Image (cartoon, rainbow, N blue to C red; front, side, top):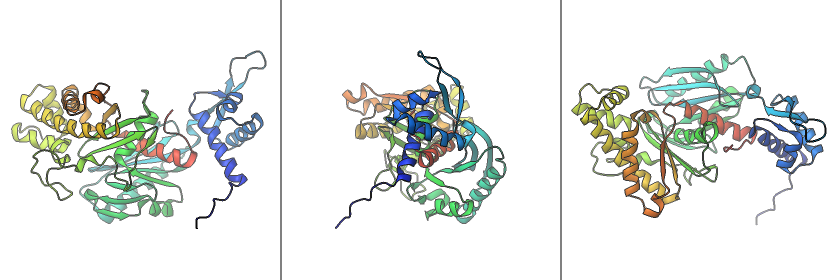
Length: 389
């Protein structure tokens, strides 16, 4: 027989209320204590006590006075961007990249280590080397923890990499390992999920609470956000569209199957296909150059890949009925022709009523989004900050 949950202790209630106050301050540029009380529903006395705690912890600061409404002008509060630092990692396919990030998503320091084809335990050693370098170079603020965006299927609840084929990691308890080593909290997430969180949290553009972010680089993955919450799925594999089998592809995928979306629509696939027709195309940059120069063969390869990706996007849109799709990652550099091919196919393959409100746009082309998103997830986990602003 199930037992009833125990009542929250005073300490738990206070911690919850402190997160509530911190979130109210974080979501605004500056705000008074009275406004925080109104936003949170807490008494002014409680807010004053909690604000004093946050000031003592140097998570917030006073920034002068606001306009008077008849009485004494209120003192305004804001989150100290430098109040905590975070280590954010992007475990990419050719290099492991990391950064020290502040609470507003400003990158303070960067490091990168080449992967050079290493996997398994050697790849884990590279992660340790990267983190040690970033922590040793962080002399300006207390460390909140480590956020990691990694390829593959990740159980974020336990920090376990269930399966990352290119790194030969299976059921790797990465989060637990790093917490024991560095004595700080660690959050591990799928890299495409992290990219979606970064767009929702740190983008200069206003993002809706329902959003699909598709990251296209050497691989393809998606992060799905519904009602401001990241969707993980029952097996932590939500958005793992790169290994959907579509079309008539014949290339053997790294997962062991034939016809996966990654083998037909990723940057790696486009470079390989274009190279057969345009020998000077040998990498991402030369493919982008060929498309921008108007090479018809390169343009056709990109258009064909875009159409295949558009089919996959249409399936996601039909499944979750999300109107806003954002494309991020290195493929964004291909620009409007690639985007138009995706839009056209996704619109054709979606029920007209759903397609009428569909917006597919280009987002961040750089891979800072993975490091930033992993950092944002850490902030949510440790400080209770919401993903939406």
